Length: 395
Length: 145
Ligand SMILES: Cc1ncc(COP(=O)(O)O)c(C=O)c1O
Image (tube, rainbow over all chains, first blue to last red):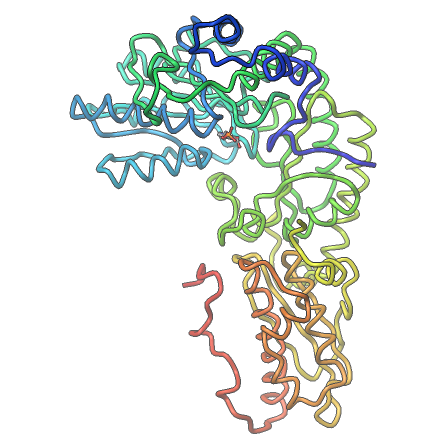
């Protein structure tokens, strides 16, 4: 059996998304900046796509800028906040310890440029409070950036409450909604969000396409200089097929959001209940305030990469926060931030479902994972020390 | 392209010599759970020859494969040859490891040496200390520093 359980990494494109891009490769391939008919048809299509994106985010079409994906949108949002802050002599930015690297690495860069960065700690459930944000805001704070939902442990942040705090304090508020868009209801106006990043490939659209919502009145800083596309804020001939496909995928996923969430969350909860039966394991992230498709566990005494390889052998695609899988020496910064010790964080497994997941797949995973964990524990000297009492179980 | 060579995958999926030797003559344990890999090697030594070897590993695919390959390379060999097994030789026997996993083969070499050293120490046998790595030279993950 083949089971794709890594939808937080990327998703299979939907038929709708694939069909939506074809006309813009085959027939309406004109450059949207050209004045002849197939150019103007492409420009017209872009406007439609912008309108669709805006409709489901609760904003106006002109508040949407198309980008090459979530990372670019995140980078541009942070640079924008920093540039605006610097003009007013405000060089303090607030974020969290569990952001995606598209945020954290840009913050590192800004830190080198003289900005002061406060990364809020998260409690074990991975959810920060609006109070934490309020308490961290200073006179010189120019930007708050808090992810909508976490890509590893799936926890959902109180975005609307943070929005209220930021509005009250007059601080620009960005959220990386790459994992949330298309999966959770979002209304940027109601939630007082000034900037929001999303990425098409997380909701069955194509890779390499995303969008940045920016409240009107907030002038964007360019990452890419060149032609006057995207109101001069993002140069480069638009990825028309990709954008059309993203809009179609977003419309479909948003129209079916409630139905999908109910189905996916039921599968998720079955998976969580089943995996929790593995001794000396722990669920990472909040059991309730989490993305409908996210499951993340740590298993004591084993290492995540070998777990993934053995699951792959059985046809299951999943992910881990172990150091080996990230190519770095440290395990996932998110698992460390929620207080998992290094040796536990190395033994993590993330399974992320989508509406294409089935109960049979969940049953298959629930059979495979305990067997593989058991097999690896039997060859682990760490596990032997634990069961023979030379070391204390942490989980 | 696959991340690992066929030989690595074979040794990972069908590891040779997994287990424990009760009353082993030498035991070497290297690595650190904090870094994400620990290797433990058990040796049975008769007349200076490794008559049996077993290993236990907590770690990634290449750590398990390196342990398995290293145990195969020293089984039945005299200690003088065992001490000549280098991390490079282990990596080559595996048909290469990805660059950022080379430390797994280093761990395998160190685990073997630690087990031999343990055997020498336990039996009060004189040996050349310069043949053995010392902790300060470790260029592993650095989290213990
Ligand atoms: C939370 C989060 N932010 C940003 C990104 C980056 O998105 P993209 O791959 O489209 O650049 C991802 C995807 O990996 C993500 O999960």
